[in-house]
Length: 288
Image 1: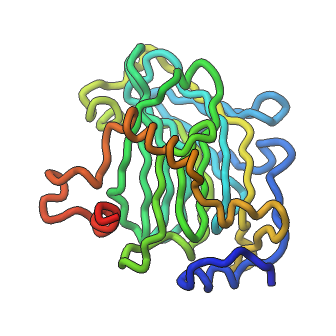
Image 2 (image 1 turned 60 degrees about the horizontal axis):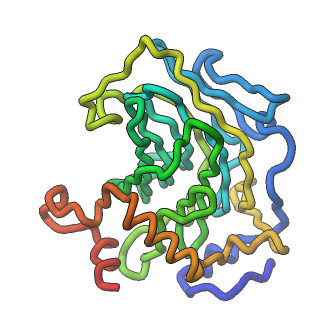
């Protein structure tokens, strides 16, 4: 059995599952994922190291990882749809199967030219979401590639942009809040039309004269527990720092800076939406 840093007792079962070595993904990007829909609108370029997804009025497109994971640190570089992308949604997310699925979402909501992109994040546990936080970006995500990362371990889920944390969802099972810890998830990415809600609540529709819309993905890197034969296998060497990675003082300052200056929606502050009471995790957070 692999030896890991000490963790809170509720995590013991998860730790007992950990075994052999898994290292960061190497090789060509398109060897690690399958383009699963879009009828040719998803294509590999740069000798298989870049995937471009496109959207027109007939269809969007998407791909998924060949592996499933239970915990990991995941990086993806994206260049989002340029110009008038209103109504479009570009995604990078993790999703398990079944009616009580777990899910961890990065969604990028398109905009009118000159308006900021909105980053939409969400966490589902046992089929229940409604944990949205949204942010403006502090740079132009269409001009170049930027790195979007998800850290998912038994202690917390952290969303990062270019190494800067923007959101943390802690394991609060001790307070009765479900946490994704037992269902393996696959990585998915897509570009699709959501003009019924994506831009200004659906007021701004997709301008199909601008089609096809294109978003580009590259450098999908993982340090993760790969699910195989009904159990996860994880790193037991120097590659496992992510498994107990906490936010240090600098990271906490970065997180607070983003949330103070760029957060535009936080479900834990939406008392109008949750008129019967905020979700349990919000109550726990507000007490701390």
